[in-house]
Amino acid sequence: MLSPSGKPAKAGSVEEGSPPQLELFGFRGVREVDGVSVKDIPEGDPRRAEIDKVRVSHHLLIAGHVGVSVDGGSTIFGLTPEFPAGMPLHAGIDALYQGACFPGRVADDKPIFDMADQYHREHGWNTNVVSVKRPIETDAHADLKQRLEGMAGQAPGAHGVYYSFPLKNAVDGQWFTDKPGPDGKMVKGENLANCATFPAQVGIELPEASGNLRFYMPALEAEATQQAST
Amino acid sequence: MIIDTSKLAAFFAEEPAAAFVIEGIRETEDSRYLGQVGLHKRDPVFRFAYWMGLCPDTHFRLEPFSAEEVGFDGIAVVLHQFTASKYQDSPEELLAGWVPSGMAERAGEWVEQFNADIRRRLLDSGQMPAQPSSV
Image (cartoon, rainbow over the protein chains, first blue to last red):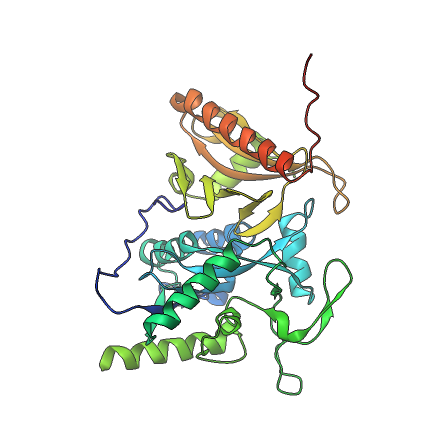
């Protein structure tokens, strides 16, 4: 498999007979280039221009992304929104920022993680991909794999999970509250998720509850660091 | 926004063109990619980072450009998302990538394949009426 970035997708690391694996993958949206904060890069600087170019076309490199793998990273399932036919990309992104929700599509987002890694390696972006392994029993692994593949095989909304950005501040301890979907029907907060809280929808404990990547990624990185040291 | 040579010139003035060269069709479990645009293998949707529904007039097209216009010769592969929609009354297009001029025939074949796939997705989902069969 090749990614759209043109790089070969990394082969999965699961060997035959090895214990079942569950991994969370995540990367931050670009906030630094070569260690320099994006807000300190002057207008007109090519590094700034490069980020502006992907602001719409590769918005996940700006926003960050999280996904789940049960095959050693060959496939990374992620949740992203599906905008209705005829809605331009920029309008969909604007609507998300204004609090809208859209049916969520579960798909193999491996190419996006490859692209984040590529921008990190080749352009100095802070979009390095972090991964943590979680212990999982064989039966639970089989169930989770089946569930993820099942969701990926369903039309958006059919699995009941809608995509929205989390609230900046929790309301009564909740980061997602009821809101109307694109068809006007109310979607319950418990059925809303972004990429970072999507793993909880399939029973995976989150490193951090809000789904705001500025909190979530440090927690994921801390878990990865702890894992590396043991 | 229509992607024409002036838009391409502005785009490539700031962007490393090599990053957008299309070398071939790429696949994941669920989608086939032509450059930056992924077409779902089953559902009438495409992705350009996020997913969007196909419109009856969604299609890929080629936009040749010259060194005089853009700084180098090539052919842009453009996804025409729609001509007008209930969300926007002007055309919307997305740049999938580009190929060197010598790959014109290859790019044409890819576009033909993807456009056939788009039609199939729309037909299968009932969003495009089937052509009446000739008697």
